[in-house]
Length: 428
View (cartoon, one colour):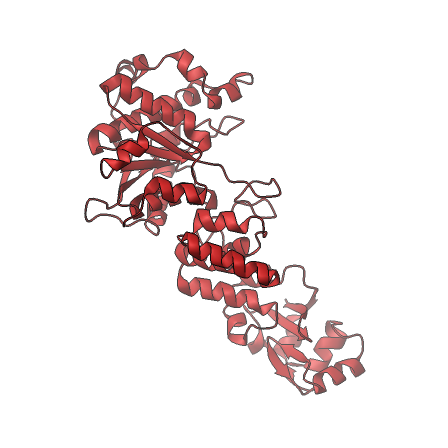
C-alpha cells in the first residue's frame, strides 16, 4: 500500500521514541521489523494488541513483520515493568503457550507469500544449543555491566534485588535482535515504551558486534482516562483474546463500555479506520453522545477481527437483550456464562425443579414462587395487557403452563415486565 509507516503511526499517536536515522532507512526501501511475544501464558490479552497493531501497520505500509515467540526467553523472564521475580515455567508449558500464541497472531497478519509476508520465529531455535561459555564470549563481552545497570528496567529493581537470570534478560533480547539482523535482514525492533532499554541494548550490540546499523521504535503505554491500567475489566481481570478465557460477549462489552474520553484514542490504536473515518465518527458522536456511536464502532471492529463477524453479531444481539430489543433466538443462543454476565445484578430467586418439570401456571410463577409481582391482581392486569414476557415470549394467559422445555441452558427462566424490568428464575 502507498502509505508511510511513520506518518501513519504519528497521526494515530502510536510513536513514543524512535532512533535517529530510521525515517531515512524507510525512504531507502522496505524493511523487516520484529516484536517479541512472551509465551508465559496460553493466550495474549488486549494489552498485546498494541504491539500487534504496530506489526499490522508495518505490513500495511509494504514492510515485512516478524513475530518472535520467546520460547527461550519465556523460561527466564523480562524484568521490565515488573516489581518482583516471576515464576519460571517448564519448557513443555512454554512450547504449548507459544503454539497457542502463533495461532492468535495469524488472525492479524498475512503470513507467507511475497516479500512482505509475515514470518514467525522462535528464539529457542538459536539458543537451545548455545553453551554458557559461548554466550559469555560471543555476547557478554560486548556489553558492559555499567551499560546494563543504567537501564530503567534494572534500576527499578536494584534496591530490592534482581536475580542474575532476569538481569541477563536484556543480553538475551539483544542476541535475538542480532540473530534476526544477521539471519533475516531484520533492522528494526518495535515494542512498548517500557521496552526501550532492552531494544536499544540490541541496537548497540549489533553496532559493537558487527558494525551494523539497526533501529528501535516504541509505542506509548496506554492508560485509561481515569488513570487505571488499560486491558483490565472493572473486576480487575485481564481481557483475553482466547474466547474460552474471555467470551466474545464480555470482550465486546469491554470496548462498548469505554468512556467518551478514551474512545478516540482507542479507535486510533486498535482499528484500521482512516483519519477521515474516525473524524466522522467523532462528529456524529458529538451530535448524539447517548447513542455511543464511537464505542459501538470500536467494539464491532475489534470483536470481528479478534473473533469473527458471526461472534460479533451474537455479542451485539446479547447486548440488545437488556434494552428490550433482543429476540428469543438471541436469548436461547447465549451460553450460561454469557447469560449470567448479561443479567449480572438482576434480581433472582430459586424454584424447585419439580415445580417446573410438572408444569406451573405463569400466574403462580410470577407471584407465589418468585415474588416478581407483589399481588396476583397486579400480575393478572399486566398479563392481560401484554406486559409480561417469559424468555422474551409475550404471555397473555395467566394459566399458561411454564415447563422444563422452556428452561434456558437447562436451568434458567427470564421474566420481564415492561421494557427493562427483569427477573431471573434459577431452577434447581
